[in-house]
Length: 305
Image 1 (cartoon, rainbow, N blue to C red):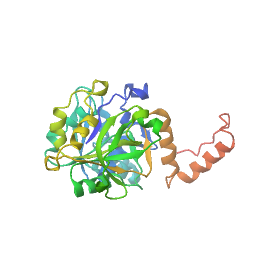
Image 2 (cartoon, helix red, strand yellow; image 1 turned 120 degrees about the vertical axis):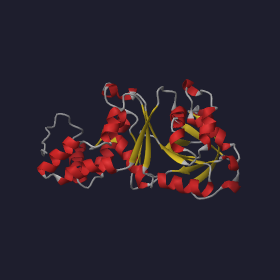
Image 3 (spheres, rainbow, N blue to C red; image 1 turned 90 degrees about the vertical axis):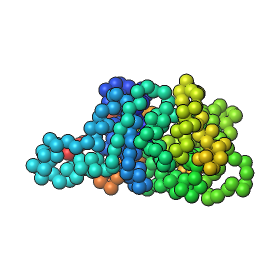
Image 4 (tube, rainbow, N blue to C red; image 1 turned 30 degrees about the vertical axis):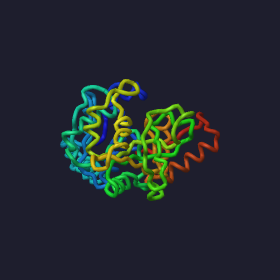
């Protein structure tokens, strides 16, 4: 399940008419990276929670007969394969979130589709490098221990107020694998001075379906929205037989944040520099530009294409 109903106001004016999930990251929209991550973890049934302005997301994963016919007529099999890839990538479904009532409310809209199975939630602002599989690890931990599992990232203490923050269970007997911790609860965007840890929740979750019943009873929290963090706090204290229990997987791999302009630009540069087809030439140019002291007056010579 991928929540994609947000307005993307941090990227105005671009997002006035184009969903933020369609921001290009090199040559693919951000949403495609997220769906590809789900598929690589074996999750091919994908539900996008959208709003009324998100039609381009549906179009991206749909067939485009005119384009395909044009490419076929030109004999451009390479580009045709790229187009087919997006269509055949996953079994993609859509549900509307009619009002922006928070992440918890967005998750709740998936109830009828999910049913009584554990399910993954992937937030589109977080891109995880395909060389550092995270979602598959979350699935593995949930299958082993039950309950719900969240992805955690160590952040500087002064930045923890930007995230949901993990409160660890202070009990050595709960220690399991090196990257797995047991959570006592969670706090949404705490004051860094009183935050229970420097482990921030990032946008990957594998949740027990018991979360739906909890969300239905969760009152609006911070910002007047139904917070998933509040529901996870409740799940952490529930008995295992009722779907309770909360664990975290501490992620130490490569993550790219497309949630604000500066981090988005960093993500594009980092991903482009690692591409087999672009990295060599791009990195050479980047090194040359850095050596010039970021000379914006330096002429640019295009290779065409």
